[in-house]
Image (tube, rainbow, N blue to C red; front, top):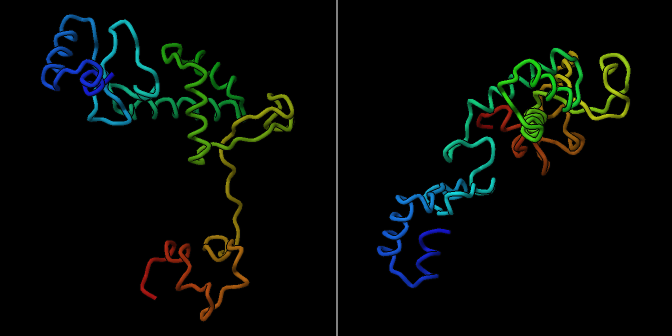
Length: 193
């Protein structure tokens, strides 16, 4: 509950309600919790309760701030396991971290969080196992993670937005779609045309 909620429920002024809240915090009956969704808003709850992940930010937050060092360490550990194993399931990565660094103590859901962000950031690929080659250790059809594939050397057209644009056939200097109106081209080659 916030100080405002307390004031509305009890009819106390904000000054009186704030004083009562501070007194209860000093006595250890209530504790103050930072809401990660609104950093200026303080919430109060019974001292024996712990805040929900929605309020505290979950495992990757510490004192109301994103713990970037912990996230970076977890990413390094996950990547090390994938490099060591070639292709690995989330369970294999979790077990490898637990075996190699028992002090890390990551829960499976934390490892899954990190793996999802690494897939979105293209540090890893999420693929289905074929059961052969680099996937030999993973049962066929099971979702697993591997390092990103090395880019095959391609032509220069693959490097510019036009080379992969589905509208390239409709693009012309005088047309509605043109290099001067293409947002992708302008981001790739910022200059005055």
